[in-house]
Image 1: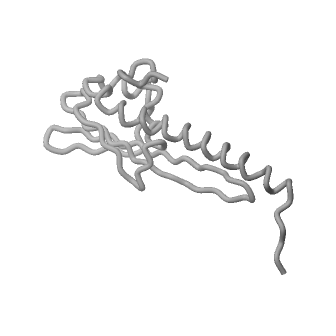
Image 2 (image 1 turned 45 degrees about the horizontal axis):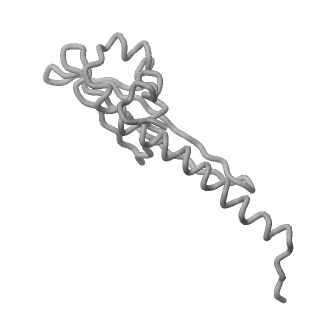
Length: 131
């Protein structure tokens, strides 16, 4: 038995496409900001980092370097109860109490990474991140 599309289902397709495109645009924007935030965080003092990003989930020290790792997870819900989860570990390497390097890992969703650094580097402070 073949089913014929109804006018309701034909109308739903463009709306679903528009919603997906809009959500993808938001995710991409956060990904761009996360990637642009890495160099903007270099030189940030530890006290400022802790005040804007909070207490890290993990920390370690080795050879005069300090490593602070923040874990972030984003969950995206879709129709019919479907959802996806993305994680990002943001590790900041500090030397003498100042951020020297920022790296992202995990299943590496840059959009999820921005959740950690957004309070430290709002979009207005990231060079070239205009609307």
